[in-house]
Image (tube, rainbow, N blue to C red):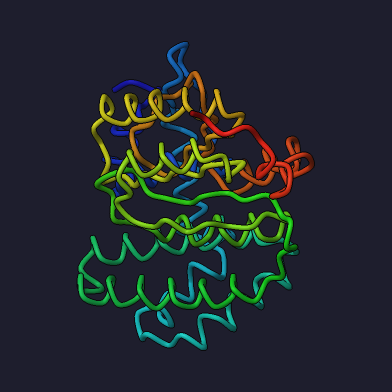
Length: 280
């Protein structure tokens, strides 16, 4: 047996999905290394210690992950109250977003173990999405705030990651233009060419596993964004290229917040964008 595991091998030993291993690694909870090609590698010993600590309840599962029962019970007000308590406890929406992401992983693990039904999972996701929308709508946004368009990759239906990203963006002073699920690439290209957005956040879930298609999408959209001075951010568990030429790959909401803090919204006000020369 090898002492160094791929994410697939680690997932098999831990009885979870490979995307769960990747999330633990990207969040810094599970120590790892990367190959020259950028692939994650986990030592068998580190995985065993991590799983032992998880079973022992040493804080691996955050409170947000333990509150999935409220999601399954479709209690929207309980979910909203939980989100606001988490914001008070953690101090920033990007931290809440990462913790809620762990809750979604926990929900998926419960479904895989047969402890919740697929109907329960869908109902929980819908209730959480509605609570996130209400919380996000309550965050104030300046009339001249820079605008980020949020969409899923063409063919992808999973928008919870975008709802969490919206909270992070609004807290950082950005306005959001919501495009939502399965957005046609042509629509994204048309929006960027109009020159009224400063950034595009594109999400692909683990269901989007066609690496060639996502690489082509990132390349086509990224080149147009680069010409228009629009930042393209790729998120989610989909098979995005590790190092896209004209985009930034983020794996956690902490990464997104760090990106927003480095670039800021200065110089990307609506007034500046509306004065920008339009393509012929």
